[in-house]
Image (cartoon, rainbow, N blue to C red):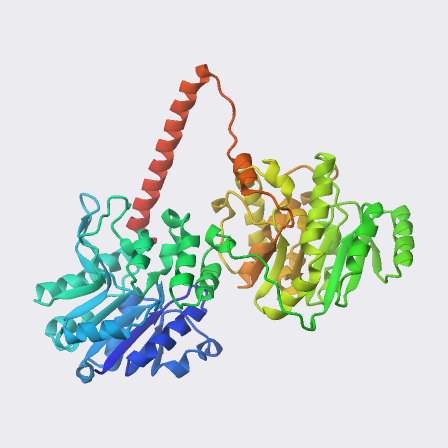
Length: 581
């Protein structure tokens, strides 16, 4: 059988994801001719991995979405020359896979002389009084036989494709109709997973490819939709989806996590579950490394210098402090340890962050920078500062050799932060309402001021994956936007420092700076052996209520629940109306 593949690619950041290259590489043996259409602008250097795997490369604007691209691909081949092929496969990059060998499926449907077939179908569904979904094959993978291709119906359908700018118009007019018109012309279809008779009572919408990834995986459908991982309804099972694919298939799971890290927010729960730092094999470290230590409490300097003695890599040490007296203590301590360091005087303003940023011109000369400080916490109990500092040192300074090896091993690694210190696990300090209402606006503001490339709204977050205590190791490239940020004096309050300042925003924004550059982050695992039951206990506390308050609270809860559902419904309906997906 002579087969043709017309494959449509789109990436909002004009990248070519590794999962796309892998997909074409695995599918290539099935086809005699592959046309690769990019609806996003790929510079020539980004086309290099795909060009040896395909026959034709077409770059176009994202007009008409994938249906506009398939139309152009068919016209590029020429409808008369389609007769040289036994089938044409129309596919896009909105799915991961193949999870399984595709050859048996082609052999099955070719042997049965199936007119057209696909992965999954969408049952007929009356969404509302005015909106009806007819039964159809979902468009991410669809195969038409020669019998269909030679029909007037096929040519007429594709030549009449218009470049709609609204996704819902494309779904209504083309995705659904690309099944309906062929059924009406007397052709028949099959799908690898026929969802028409499956139980959909628990689904918000009878789209199994989106809302029922467990069914897709259990039924061994060869492709799983990218959006199945992003769906809010699947937030609690994303980790298990990844585990299933890793255990039951040969598909490289990093192709999924790497792609989703770039196109989605970087710290979704299913991604966080795979962010722990690995033990890297020993080899020479080829990085130019700087360490900045802000020494506000010189009596704690000994702890750091003793820890630094265990490093098996070279580094330059920069120390900052704020008084003559402290400088003298520091110099004596450096002499005692026979350590060379550059000591810089900085004002007592902006805690450890502003002294760090004051060194930006010197730090730019390095590949990797470690930032630490002699942390105490005067605002909280004695145990808070002590536990934060000692645990952060245990997570980021004690294993520094392995952290450096990870940077060497993984060119895509941008920043390493510590796991959540135990004090935050025993005490509900970070309040999601405060994070969202008070700190997110500051983060949005500085994101805009730093001219970051990716769009992000920190109001979408209830909590942030942050560098607690602003302890971290990072590539200088990650820190460059922060170095360029002009922080006004009025933005940095004097001591005692209040909550919700630009300093707190910077503490929370660092991994997102790496994400903006498509660089990854890793978490250095805590050394504290604490049961997760502690976290459950801490974060599921509620206020005690009296019997007299119960009814008022119940009514308030019902009202809030109603408003939340109403908001969700309005967003959903307006999203459909204006074509947002």
